[in-house]
Length: 135
Picture 1 (cartoon, helix red, strand yellow):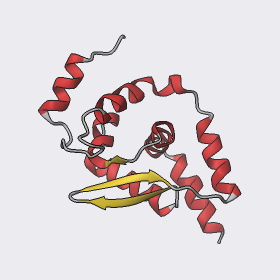
Picture 2: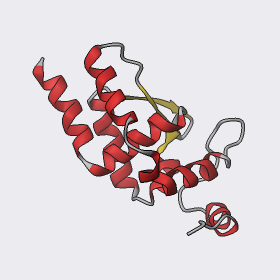
Picture 3: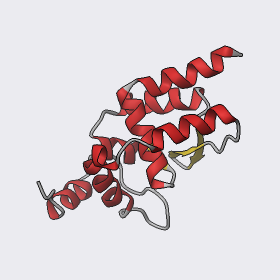
């Protein structure tokens, strides 16, 4: 059973997966691949692969709704999972300011809690242009 713990540590050891998991921890909502792609500025292949790795490690679960697959944090009560989650929560939010901003914008595009806009859409580009960063 040691493989289970190794899978968790490996999943969180890769920067893209850690960013994705941290984002899920912070937003307290489910997210689909299209939304994660826009928030993180990553490809479908990378986001999908990273989410599947997090799922295989037991850190997230997937639920299909129509053409979208939504990922949420697993609520595992086991001490090891709780400690991994607690460790990720200690990462300062200032490390992910842009991801948080983009995530709030992207999730605001939902209709009744559902993703209705594909990745990289014109609507998403317009949203970014009308809400520039403060940098």
